[in-house]
Length: 181
Image (tube, rainbow, N blue to C red):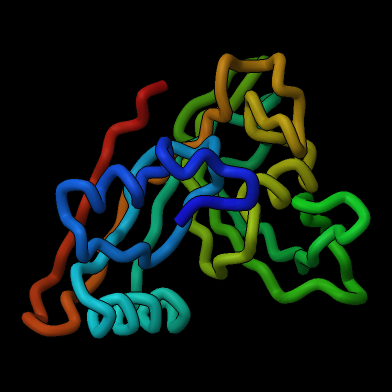
């Protein structure tokens, strides 16, 4: 499903529906994020999978390269997020209006300039990973909204893993996609 102002012809869902006319969006990625997305081939399955997302029954994993050397090898970022209405589409940390938001991270490698991290968004707020990492002083490289777009040729954030139990067959499904960076 395209975001506001998106080019409908270059939208992934539009392209996918050319081959699979019944394909329906289950969840979205930020426009500059690469990686795995989940589509359904019926409205019944779309509802079931969307419910699984909202009930946190679908595991999600991301890889990002962030600015600076992270000190901790693993941890949690537990900061409430709300819309930054005057600066839409931006989000912000807000203890007054924010909704609970939790991100787990594990450092994979680092140097003095950057750190490669594995991320697990426990909640699914808009721009959650980008806002959380910027809030702790490690914006994702190439992030035009919350960091410095000149630090990389693109946003270095990739949806690399999805795992869930198929709602009809009961089969455990695990999907992996290697980051292009």
